[in-house]
Amino acid sequence: MSNLYQFKGASGMKQPTELTILGRAGKKVLQKLSKRHFISRKKRWLFVDFAEMNVPLHSQFDVLLKGDNKALIPSFYKVTLLECIDQFGNQLTAIPEGYKTICRLEFHPKVPATIDELPSLDTWKANPSHITLANHADLQLAFADPFVNDLSYLAYFTVLEQMTTKNPIRSVSDFYSLLEKKFKMDRSQADRILGVFMQMGKVKRTIDNDIELVPAV
Image 1 (tube, rainbow, N blue to C red):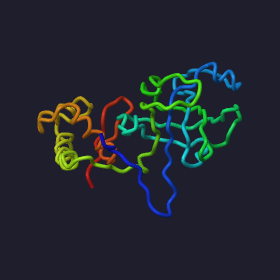
Image 2 (image 1 turned 30 degrees about the vertical axis):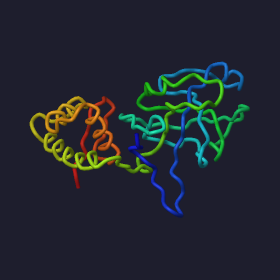
Image 3 (image 1 turned 180 degrees about the vertical axis):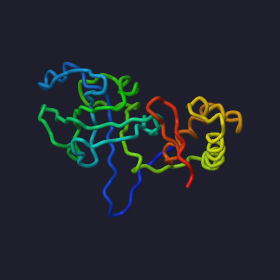
């Protein structure tokens, strides 16, 4: 399947920041590197693949993409880089360009299930289900077919109209049901349209997993 999302790039401009998470760092690994090992509600130690540019501590991300095709994980998250160490346990002030590292990340409002479903690793290993962290501002849509492109515009104004009626769409389930009824699409197509809306900045997912539609301008 073609990538639904691709990273923006322009000559003379710095590369957009992204991090590739391969898996979770196990207790034995962190004990060997003399690091505290704990699992808190919002923080995890994770193996991070080669960085394409320097990423300083306290950098933040708001988009999670899964696998090589970078499928959107559709929910609201803010991810902060709290701590970074190299293979020898040295404390770093940034993820250096070209380095593999082990990082402690904080997730808000909570750790996504897809993070905890990653394998527990003792070193950096390829993982086809890796998670890419990115920022909305660095992404652009790469429509794989005209169906998604055209239908997304029709669906947007249908949903916008429904949001202003006496029975507004507020949940993801409502969103799916409307598209299934109005456009005879199946649940997977409706889910893809929701992903398109989110990346276009037309829909925001709230902390309680409802949706907010951003009015057209």
